[in-house]
Length: 180
Image 1: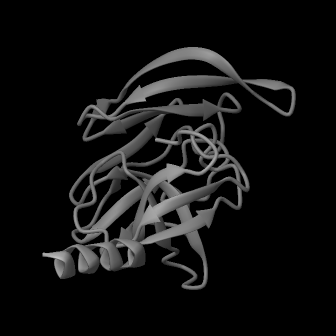
Image 2 (image 1 turned 60 degrees about the vertical axis):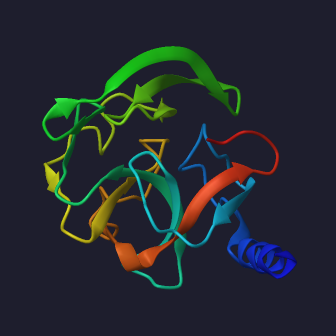
């Protein structure tokens, strides 16, 4: 029995890794330079997970974004409001988020599976506030930053849907505060 516990401890230690956010694309959830821990053995990705993944366009770059779309989903932004499979995602405006002394619109968004998180809206009529419908291919996922007007995510041409093999791990917690 002690050998099994040691083996479990070694596997757990090898499957957890610390990263840091290089940008504010996940604000207010994870802010620039904030350190977080991921679980590397990522078997069952689910909508709403915060995921570290290898960029499909540049294998030397890792991003951290929220998994929004599952294989087969239709994702679209209409007037800054996320739609999944033709349905608007439930959202409620909450207290403003202050960044650099500037108050920004902040939303509490609830995905179809019940995962609730905060998103930021820096500007009305932002570049990705109105998009075509993106259909997530089999074996791929659609990622979006919580800072919707400041994220290089699956909505941009060089981003696109992320192949399952590019998933590195799921963020399990931030080192300085809660980031789930």
